[in-house]
Length: 159
Image 1 (tube, rainbow, N blue to C red):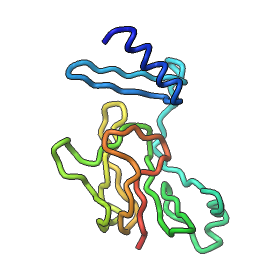
Image 2 (cartoon, rainbow, N blue to C red):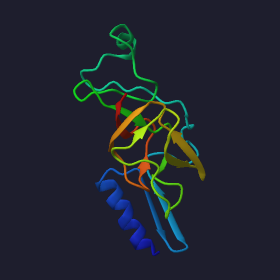
Image 3 (cartoon, one colour):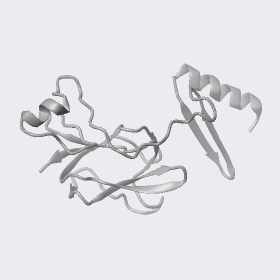
Image 4 (tube, helix red, strand yellow):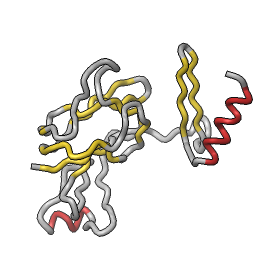
C-alpha cells in the first residue's frame, strides 16, 4: 500500500466519522484507528449493559412495572422485542468459520444457552450466548462488521 492511498483512507474516515477501518488484501493487513490516542485504549469490559431507549422506564422503575429484561438485553415497548447486545468491542462473526453455517438465522428459536455468534476481541474468539429464550426476529449486524460495547446485534421476540 502506498502512503497516498492511506492518506485518502484517513480523509474518508474523517469525512464519514469512522473510528476504525480494517483492510485485508492477501498477506497485507491494515488497521487505521482515530479518536483514541495510542496507549490510552479504554479497558475492555465484559459486563453487558441495559440501555433505555426513549420512552422506556429506567431499569430501577422497570422492576416495579413488572420486571426488567436480563442484563445486556433491552426491550422495546412498541414491538415487544428484546436485543442481544455485544458485551465487548470487537468483530462480529455469524459462524465459527468462513465456510461454516451461521449459528442462528432469522426465525430460529433459541434458548438462553444458545451460542448466537462470535465476537473477536484482541485475537480471542468469544462465543456469545443468547441469555434469553425466544425467536430471532432480526440480525442487526453483518458478518465481519466491527461492533461496539452495548451495540444491539440481534432482536428477539422473548418467550
